Image (cartoon, rainbow over all chains, first blue to last red; front, side, top):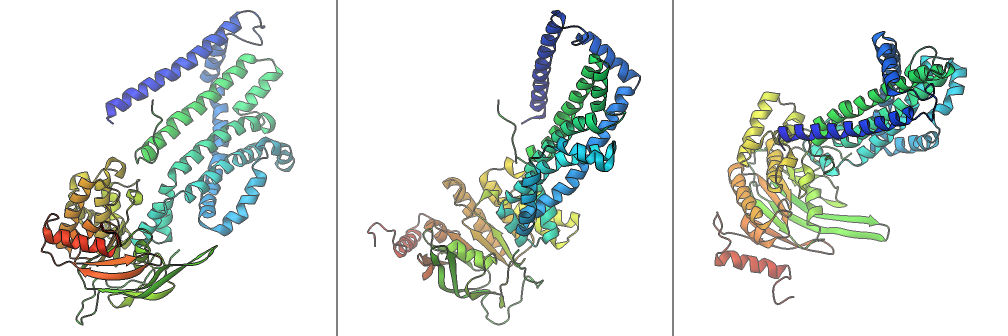
Length: 266
Length: 270
């Protein structure tokens, strides 16, 4: 595979992605212009773009996005910090697995947003609640993927490394973590997505004054559909960028390069 | 985790005529839900330093199990392995191991990265270990592929990297478990020639497990023939043909026939 070919593939993928998005936007515009709905409820794209542009220029949207990102990254970071090592321990030691797995199975089905009322009672409105909810949403995908990844590490790698004199520390950093990396990266990806979904909901219920979720909820009070929609655009855009650029590059630099995972063919 | 043998000198000077590797009455009994099954029973043999011994036998005769016991991955139910006079407890850096499966290489490390692993574990400085590893890759004729990842290498090349990796930290013993069994016939012939060269250069003590009789006659100083259920040593056959060996010579084919007869695989049957 050559770099030119890869670049071309990348360009084509980008073009396909753009085509889908443009088609959906055109459909929206057609419905909005058809007159079936009041413009106040379904503003045309131009109005949304105008509102978005203004809010970006005066910095309010960027500030909201920064608050949201701060919360999501804190909760996500905490989930990785705890989920990754715990997942490795679960995969390595039966006792940890026996202890953590029933707990995870019991907590996992509870939607993270269901915790918000009780968390508000404990912590009040604000960052601690939103960060905890994000953490809760992001923890389980990270934990379970890492656990699966560690169990999927080829025992031959462990034997070979052991025979070459690797101690527990070296086994962990130089065999288990890279060996489990396809699952760990899938875990990071899922975790971040869950965190991103959770933060918006959490902000609607528990944030005061700042955050993209709060913007939507607040705009509802004043029927500002253009503000709501421009906030949605920003939410989608940040999610898209992190998914495609951040996690996509991590994958290309690691597991694709190592041949441990392949992009889908055609 | 298996326990590891403590640090000890890799090459023990042998003044007394002590065998380099000695298997003393090795028995391994598996506990299965349907009762105990003997995998290996009463296996004994001895090897001189720099000797090349092939263990042949039909599948299920316990030859790979025996190799894993010598490697220290499995503890035998009774008996002991001695290497350079010391009993084997767990694995140690006096033995290098090559498995059959290509997947034994670390896919996240380049060929060079794989070969330096053992040296890295020993704490050798980076520049020095890369020099040593490149030398090993040259030995298996892969110096031009040092920066390639395993998934870009063919099966034969991956096995050569595995050999270089097992030799890099300079163990006295090389243990090989059907390393070329998954390769096509032509590549396998090349690999056997290469291994014979590597062995002549490095003078390691090699235990090589195979079910391929021609391979055993080509490589070995001595062939240990095993029979299954339970795995026992049937006999030992010395191969005294001059090297490099000609697989089409009459003597070569005679040895092959003899081994096949011992394995009960010749045309007349048992």
